[in-house]
Length: 372
Image (tube, rainbow, N blue to C red):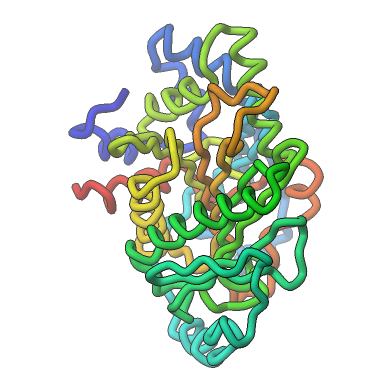
């Protein structure tokens, strides 16, 4: 584990494209743990541009030499087969913080909308609404599961969230799960989702989250995580999520804040993915989520994001969930004013291609949370 005093120095000297060299400097025990969890491969790409392109390359990439030979590192999670490709040319770019004034104007132009007066303009669930201090629920009018609700924020601007609002939304979600389960005892697998702005898939810019409660088994990608943890425990007699966090912590990419473990993922689904683990859903976790989100917006240039809280079943089940913590995943979805999509065929059907270096994400995160 990297101590707090040397953390910034370690991160400043680390880069994802040098991951093989970084792993080689670890202790035998640390390398063995890492090898159980990850496979790392490096390759080099070459190209020959026509001379006519040289000025354009200099303008957009800094120099011709930087594009002629490009190092690519592929990190694969052996347990889940989550896989990410990092290109040296892209991952060395600095992370700049900005919220363009144009975006603020675009958000302001969308008010008022139906979520501004939810009790007049949104349907209710059969068990009624859950009302918090800063949020209120509605029934999702176009459901993608039998139990699917919306948690509407009292702030129209989705980036004007506060710690109190985030805590309230998480508390309201727990009450919604309880009421939905009471309404239908077969619905036991809860999921909290927060899509912020258009790039994230949000149909309305007004601040809101979503909740769903399914039955039979958890959603496929969450069940995959549980099965991976089970297989890992049976193979190595080790707790998968504990080992995964410690592997990140060893590199300076993970840190524990109270009862919440936080890490910049080595296999991010997309840009700047941050993962949190907790034993339960409560105010401590909600507060940690707020602090990480605040850092992402203020220090990591994130204005559109996806956030999910994957929880264990509400009742005992035949499946073993004993090794699975509450899992929170947050990912940047890019500039909502940019027409280019961040997801393509590679991300949908092969592996993630990511520009942001997890070491730069962690550096900004710890500096923001702990100070220098």
